[in-house]
Length: 306
Ligand code: GYE
Image (tube, rainbow, N blue to C red):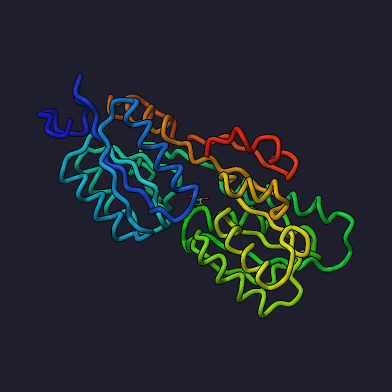
C-alpha cells in the first residue's frame, strides 16, 4: 500500500496495491469505455485506483504523475496524450522506484527502461487495414479517388500511426489522392467543424477517412447538412467500433470500421500485479482486433460490449 515501509514500489507483501492512473480525458466513446474498463477491473482485482483525468493536456498528466510519485503509489499507469516529452517525469518515477505501465498509447522515449510494459493496439496496423479496404473497394476504378482525412489529436500515437499506416498502403496506387488532412482532436464537435470546412473548399470528395468513430459521426452531420448522403455520396472509413459507430455502420452511413478495443482494464491489472511483485512482464502486449463491414455490424450490434 501507499504507506508501506517497504519503500513503495518494491512490492507490499499482502498489502493491497495502489495504482495511480492518468487518463487522457473524456474526448470520445472509446475513452469513456476505456475508463469504465480500468475502473471496473481495478475494483475486481482489489487494486485501489487513484484516477486522474487530464482533459487532453500533457501538463495535467505530468502533474498527476508527480502527485502519484509524491503519494508513493505502488504502480503508475497512464495513457500518454502525445508521444513526446515524457523523459523527465518518467525518470522521476524511476528514481522513486515506482514502476510505470503505458496503456493504450506509446511514448517516443529512447530509454525503454523508463517503463515496464506497453499495453495497447498496433495503430499502424489499424491504418493499414483502413487503406486495404479502400484499395479493394476501388479496385476497378480508374478515375482519381479524392480522400479527406480527419486526424486524431496532434502528436498522439494513434494520429501519427493511423495516418502513416493508411498512407503506406494507398501510396501503391497513384489514383488515391489525400486532398485535405486536418486534426479533429478525436471529438465529434471538431470532426463536424473540420468536415464542414472540407466540404466548402472541396466540391468533389469521394472518401472520408476519420481516425476515430466520433469524428466520423460529427462529419456525418456536416455531410447531411451539406445535402449529401454519407456512405453513398461520400464513403466513410473510421476506427474504434464503439456502439454509435457500429450503429451508423449498420445504418449504412459508415462503410467500414477498423476495430480498436478499449477493454484494456483486465490485462492492465494483471500486468500491475506482476510488476509490483517484481516479476518479468512482456515489454509489449498487443490488443487483438478485427474489422467490420456493414453486414457484419448488423450481425454483432446487439452483442457489443461498448
Ligand atoms: O481511437 C480515440 C480516442 O488512443 C486508441 O483515443 C485511443 C484513441 C481512440 O480518443 O477514439
